[in-house]
Figure 1 (cartoon, rainbow, N blue to C red):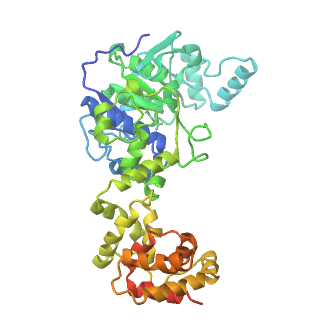
Figure 2: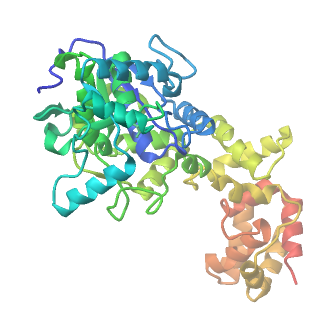
Figure 3: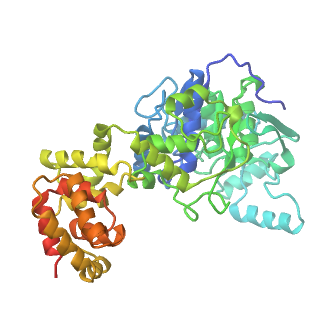
Length: 491
Ligand code: GLU
């Protein structure tokens, strides 16, 4: 059964088809990004389809969050929720009649059959297969029931599932990343299309939709590779010619640092977490784009425009990619430094508001704006703005136990007193003048090391040993408040 020998002329139509049973995770987003990049590179279309037939696990809230996540990342789609399109609806839960119709057709033309086996019977037979070391899976018991057997089952009140008949033989297809793939049908037993309650299974819905939505390229995670022969079987039963099957490209797994598949257990997977931590969408896209794909050089920075220009499926690496948080953080820092101050401000404000650092008045925003240039070099995640800028907006600084004991001891007390003496007379409150005075008094005259000299001053003024550059911070805070804080630190 040769598959996907189709001409390359047709417009490319890719699809991203998550089942949002939680927040989209790193693997989902990399798939979405590659689907998007391929559609944009080829001038084709990206379809966004929600696979929500399992309504116990996929909720409206998760669907909404999936939509917002893609929007936030800038991965726009041409057909799907919010935008519609010619092959909708794009929520599978709104397409149940379509799947049912196809399942009935498959029953009528003999591609599928009603299967009356109960769960207990299936389990008992599977147990036997295990004992005999046979390939597990449905044994074909209901493939050719007589009219008598059927009516007996019906009288017993059994409700059948609809099962697809898998003919003997093999399925071959060319995976655009993995090359030639063959599945021996000995290991692909007849499979369920519709449950006894009339609800469709993933294999039916996904295949029917890919055909009806005229998908030409299925780029998706490697975990779905083994479902491909079943999907191809559905295409055939639908009467689709082999040259019209979509191309498949199965993206290798994203692994954690421990070389196990990235999951909650060995890393942070939820994109929502990255957003809360202050990773910028362009940094996430940049990092994920180069996770398992490269344009042929070893660059670490790429813009969305460059990705669109350069993306080809052929350059996706067929071996698993390793997720490296440090690298993502470094890229995030680069992207933060590349922001204009206005853009930086727009992105920083939500964090400061959420953390209650500011209430949002014009005066506060002006202070934030004036402070941003001095922290732009120093943060790798946007949520760090809170710790960095809080000192500007509090009435009085509070110290944790460690800082408190540190500035209470000598030589800290001596340092703070001396700093006060030289800063009080200072006429003009500029960071370079503040620095010159403190260097002269504390380093040159007292002979202290910078850390010993400036550490206590930093804690006294900002409340923390992590802060923006000290002298700039003091300038921003103003003379009166700086002096008051130093005075308050004297025991
Ligand atoms: N809905 C499937 C999932 O989230 C993916 C379907 C597909 O890409 O074929 O696992």
